[in-house]
Image (tube, rainbow, N blue to C red):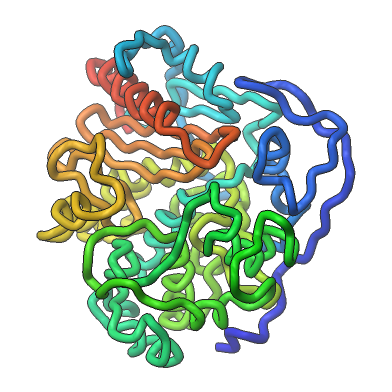
Length: 426
């Protein structure tokens, strides 16, 4: 396929508008101009995360008209559910109010038991998923693997020969999925010269040469060429190190293996068979390459449906959408996965046996309890024993907060424990 020459599926431009106020943990700016230079920063992100299409080019992830999978309702009051975090007693209602929540939805045995919106968000509003996008992208890899179109153990250059002359030579698809290549990539969001700021310019998330993106590398336009500029500072197959760019390389591999664009694959292989209610979208660079690691926007209900898909080991209704063995492999992890995790970026605060596999954070494989997670407070929790999915979309004022993250995990556990005694069919 013509990787370098395809145009964006939709080009859009932003402008000055009156931004709606309201919501938890602060409100959207009313009259301030939201631009490419400030849209990820507070308070501008409170508006921008629900209006990405007005700032950055994107491609449509189409639902299937008339084939929505219903979400039955059995609503309960969960705001009073309490939990402890670092010696403090909090309630779910307090968490929602204090953590810049935009949307919050809980499924129990396939039924909606709680659904709340803040900050002007509504059920049909697409919200930026940030790195929850990685888990969606990896699910497509699982579908292709189940059909024999993608071998997770294959070296990347077997699928994309162009990668054979880059630092990715010798790396495997699975090492992309598990963040275990040797790639050097600085993802410090507080460092204006970090690689992550350069690649945001490549993907048109920042204007070329802006003050927040002074790192080396191309200013805009071609993600595939940018991959070739990256170097290694470790061996492939080493410890887990979180680097978003690896999922974007994975997207190139997926597209080449399937011979189709990523947004078309997500639509046909995930969104439509799982019965999505609304279209989603994904941002693209100047040549149509998708930002697979963080560029998907979707509605709250549909990302909860995605969590339900994984809760049911890849099934939606009677249809096996993602292979059950792929979900099992995700939860079980690699034999050396816990060691790679402990020796890598995120050993603190996780129980023994935790690992990162197929772009999911697996906190307790025995339960199981695992989740998709993105900066600024995007989460989809899957708790197996209670048959619970908790989806929360937010606009934290900073990229990452250990305090808000810890509170959110503790709240998800408390909700699951509360729901564990309730029955129902899903």
